[in-house]
Structures are given as C-alpha cells and as structure tokens.
Image 1 (cartoon, rainbow, N blue to C red):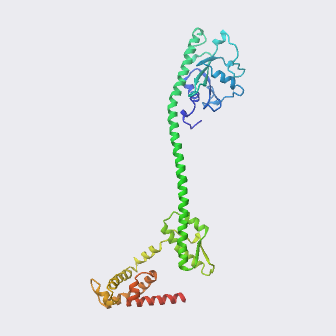
Image 2 (cartoon, rainbow, N blue to C red; image 1 turned 180 degrees about the horizontal axis):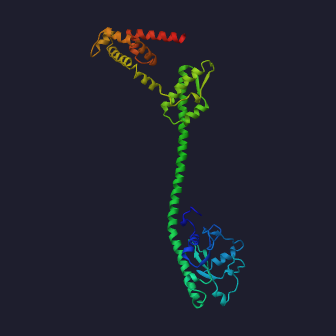
Image 3 (cartoon, helix red, strand yellow; image 1 turned 180 degrees about the vertical axis):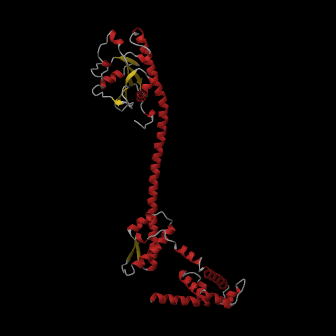
Length: 384
C-alpha cells in the first residue's frame, strides 16, 4: 500500500493505520468491509504490539457467512469477549453470555452502513482488559457499562471523522482521475490519428519521389527505381522535400558512375546513394558564383539583359546595338576584351548553366565564338 494516497484506501483501513495514535489502550484492531458490491469481504488486522504498522490479511475461511450476520446486526455497536468472535480461535458467536461475562467483554464491534447500500462494514477493537488508557480499571465495575457506551461512541465518531475527511478528497481524486483517463484516451486517439497521418504522408512522399525519379528516367532514357532500403530511408528521414529531390539527383549521378558498365534495363537507387545532407546543386552553383565566377556571371547577365532589349526592338544582336542600349556606352573593343579576358570562366559557366543566357549564346558573335570553342574542348576531353 506504500506510495498510495491515504484517502484512496478504505476508511476502515485508514482507521487501522491511525488507531495507534487516536485510540490509546488498544492492543489490536480488525476491519471487515467490501470495496464494492461485487467485491468479496476484505478482512484486515493490525496487532499494535508488532513493529509493522501495515495491516495484515486476516484468515476468515469458513467463517464468512457467520461473520456477515454478526456485522449486519441492527445495533451500531456491540461488546464481545474474544471467544465470542467466530473467526477467533475457539470462537463461538452462539455462546450464551451470563451476568459476569458481560463485565469482562473488552472487544468492541462498531458497524457502519456502506454508501448507497443497506449492508454494513465493521471495525473490531480489542482493548486492554484494564482499559487503563481510558482512565478506568477493573475496580470501577459499577460504571463500566456506561463508560463502554461512551468509548463506543468515541470510536464511532473517530471513524466517521476519518470517513468524512477522506470522502471529499477521494471524490475530488476520482473526478481528477476521470478527467485524466479521458485526456489519456483523447491523447491515444490523437496519437493514432497522427500515426495514420504520418503513414499517409510517408506514402504520398514515396509516390512523389517515384514520380520525380520516373521523370529523370524519361529524360535520360534509362529506368531508375528505388530499392526497399531507399524507400524506408525516404520515409524515416525528416528533411524538406527539396533536399530529398536534390539527394535523388545526386544519387542518380552516383548510380550512373558506379554502374557505368551495367547494361541492365533497370538501375536501382539504393539507400547508400542517398545523402539528404549533401549540399544542394543550386547552393553549390551559387557558392561558386560568389567567388571567382561572380564578375563574369554578372557580365553575362548584363549582356543578356541588353540583348533582350535589342531583340524586343527587332534589331540584330551586334556589338553596336548592344552598346546603344547601355546607359554608359563603351567601345566594341571593350566588350571583346571583357569576353576574351574571362573566356575560361564563361565557358565553365556555360557548361554549368546550359539553359542560361540563350540570346547572346546563340546570336551574339563574341559570345558565340567562345561558347563554341568551349563546347569543342569539352567534347574532346569527354571523347579522349
């Protein structure tokens, strides 16, 4: 019972634990109660001469029916001698008392009606025979009967106090526990919904990745498929979709290079090829541009923007028509010098951005000349 809120225990069990302090002159107490209408009779005992304060289970096998009758008597309390109790050794509740035996009865049974029931629970209190703890001894026999009534009422009041104190705390706790259970059920439902949503998202994510990979297959004329391991990795890695696409692009490049002699119709993209933390291709290009390629990149952008204006006027794309669109015109020689001076950088940018600067690459002779040279050298390297 340790670690449990005291008010969650049955009030008679609480009384057993507190009786050492509240009831002096007591040597033992027994409690009999039903935790609910469907629960069997609980029987606990506490020997105050023992070191342990924890109540122990009381053996009442074969005595329950007789004991239940004794517990459910109409009287709120009764005094007995120990051998009248059916569950005690040599106990006999049918023993006929005499005048003298009444004076020696030091065992008190107090009865309490259960909540929402006509049945009763009982607390049995074993007093020391001289009752010295209550300010009397055996020489005071003429007042003993009246005094016992006072003691019985005191025990009843004490137990009812415990019952009244624990009841509201117990009711509040039961209410809180009900709310907690309801919240737990809601949380479990929410968790299940989130798991379902997660599974649906993962399925949609795999569908999107398969579609993206199929587009690459269509462009390159080869069939790429994800392995089971790759699909599992895609499902379980928490990264943005653009990084997944970037990883797929890089994975395809790796697969091509590692399977360069593979003539199979299908190339599998395995989990070993996927690196979601790899720098994005666009980031790599931007980083490159921000270093040695920044000025030639910007100059190509500048020429392309001027060429767009010339083309919009339906004029030929020549050095002079380009110069005419400049706010601060330069000579044709200056354009030629800039292009030739940055030729290698521009050729690299053309390979890096095959779809960028389409007008000047196809119609502006200074650019057209270095672009074609770069393509020829690139082909020679590839074929060599």
